[in-house]
Length: 105
Image (cartoon, rainbow, N blue to C red; front, side):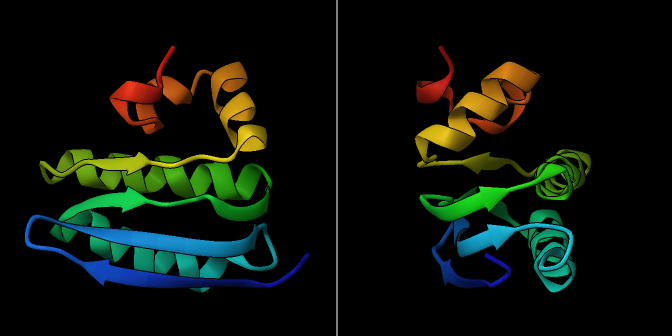
């Protein structure tokens, strides 16, 4: 559960970052740095369908990337989202910030 990897796929107007594994305190450091750098440069779509676990530090990374993007006129959204994470985002209220518009219900 303590492993995390990701790919970055560049498109004309955005990047798709696809993490796989667990975003937790023990795995978050480098991922956070990459995500924050991208969020100030371009719109980011986080394909989090490959995540198996996200703790509070992972949620904090998603919010920090969202805020960094917003500050620079960029967007950061999570799409697609596995059911376990979608529930957490909706319960915490973070879904209104982080979910793609078609997912917010």
